[in-house]
Each structure stands twice: as C-alpha cells, then as structure tokens.
Image (cartoon, rainbow, N blue to C red; front, side, top):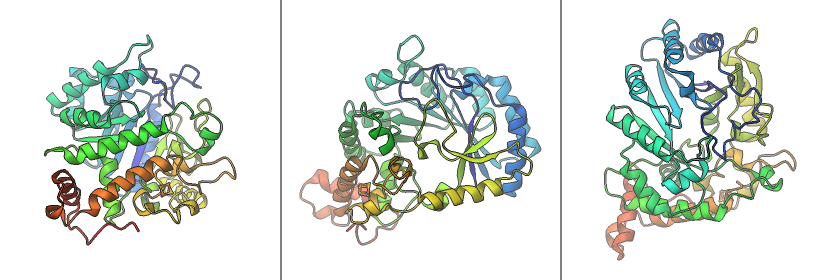
Length: 402
Ligand code: SF4
C-alpha cells in the first residue's frame, strides 16, 4: 500500500542551492503551482486507497511556503471532506527562510511537523544554500529552527553532506540545536552521472571521512542524543534488524510505500532512482499515470510501483555486493546510487561504495564490542560499544556481518 505522498507543491524556490536537482533558473515551467483540483483528486483517490488507514503527506517543493498561508489553509481544509480527523499526518519540508510567527501559528493549528534544510555549520551551509543575491541562508535557517522550537513545533533537520569541515564538530552543533531528528543526505549521484563527469565536483573521500567522524562523535554524545537516521539504521542492520531507511538498502515494502506527486498530478518514483536530467524533470521516473487520468487509482499506481521496483531490482542486493564483508550493514546503500547507464541497470555497487564500506566497517568495529563493553580496556571504546548496543532493545549475540 502507498502510505506516503511527497507533494511537489510548487516548482519554484527563493533560494538557489547549487546542488538542487529540482529548481534552477532554467527549470521547465518554473513557477508552476499545484492546482486545487489536483490536490482534490489526490485526496479523493488516496482516501479510497487508504480505506481508513493513516497516511502521510509531505509538502515539498521548491519551497512549499511560497504557496502562502491562505492557499495552504485552503488545501488543508479540503482534507476534511475526505479523511477522518487525525488520519492525515501533514509534514512540511522547508528551507526556513519564510518561517515567521504566522506560519508557526499555522503549523501549530494543523499539528504539522516541519523539516528544515540546514547543512550543518555555517560555512558548509552557506557554500551551497544561497539566496538569489549570492548570500548564504544560514541565519534564516537557524532563525526558523529557533522559532519552530519556541513555538512547540516538532522539527527535524535535513543536512546534505558535502565532505567539508569536521564531522565531529558538525555533529555536536546539530545535537545542540535541540531538534527531534537529524538526517544526513548524500548528494544525489550514481554511476551514470559520475561517468558523464557530472559528479566530479563531489568530494567522495571527504564525505566518507565526515560521516565516520560524525558517527563516532554521535556515539560519544551524552543523553539526550539527537536521533540520526543513517547511523541508527546502520547499527540496526549490523544487529541483524534490517530496517527501511532509504540509504541502507530499503526493502520492497519500504520502497513501494511512497511516491512523488508532481505539480501537474504525475505520479513518480523517487527522483533519485533514475539518471537525473536536471532540465527534463520527471521524464525518467514517471510511473505512467496521473491523478487526473480516467480510472486512476492508487491501487493501480501501487501495482505499477511494485512492478517497476521488481523489474529494476531496486530492492535486492546487487550481484557486485554478494561477497562484500559489510553487505548486511550497508545493503548497497540507496538504490538510486547504484544506477549505471551501461546496461541501464541498478545491479551495481553504490557509487558511494568506498564511503559506505568504511562507515559500515567503523559501525561493525564499535558494535563488535557490544556485550563486553565493561571489559574493553579503552574507556572511550567501551562507552561507544555500550551506547551502540543500547539502541537495540534486545541485543542479539553479535553483529550480523561476516
Ligand atoms: S560497501 Fe559497497 S560492495 Fe559492500 S554492500 Fe555497500 S555498496 Fe555493496
């Protein structure tokens, strides 16, 4: 069943982040906003598909707050005709620059949780996340987080890792923000982009180093320690508790539980799965259906999604990873990072293989000591082992990687 829809509410943004896969000044149909009729059709068809079960709507963009509070209010009030109270969890992903007291009140009234894009320390953030005048947007993002926290809104941080700066210092900084969660995102890349010379600017080695530093620092943090999705997923995988985090080899069920709704109503697979053509968005990853189609249903979209995932092998470990020592921890990372134009296949190692191998190896080392933490001579190592183990409710006999 499809339980989550990421709604591309507007194809416009007030920032010009240099790594953005969705918006830049040459984006086709820049400025297009989702129509009320498209949202109505989404509600109508999704409520039929959900049959009373809870669903999640993630309002995304571009910058979704550019819709303005009145328009947003109208779109949310339309939900009442299709869903029982409390059946929809609404979330907003924002760059934070437009958040003000009126938005805080709006989020509170509708019990909306908010994700703010903040790429760690100021230097890293401002290097990539710039306004149209070229200035960085760090202070706007920080201001938004402060307002949201003070307003009692549930807030998480999404941080794209560029491999610069100290992972440990960044981790301490993000922990001090007092947010509910941190998600480290790897810049979108795959073999096709790398082979075409479009990934050369990425500092792969730096990204690997940064993540290892951040992971070790994360284990060293005292409670309350902010949850970091990537690290928790790796630890759980290592204890033989496969989970469905996107960057650690999600299962078929996890991959088929959400889709993207484009502003024109097109239903798409997660945009990371294809070789992205930055200027021809959606051409590569559509499911061949639109909520406005006669006879459209999310049951149909779900069948197509599962078929596509199976056909492309997105939920299975690539042959290249079969002998890898940390395959049960890394699980070939995000399926989108495995894509290669040669053979148009996802049956390759992740383009982040080296970085994920080293990170998984560090995870394995730390939890390999679980269960004998009190006997480890180095107190720092013992503490990390105990903390990694404490994340798993019932610690099994040992890590699962061989
Ligand atoms: S580290 Fe590399 S070879 Fe091992 S599972 Fe991950 S992507 Fe595959």
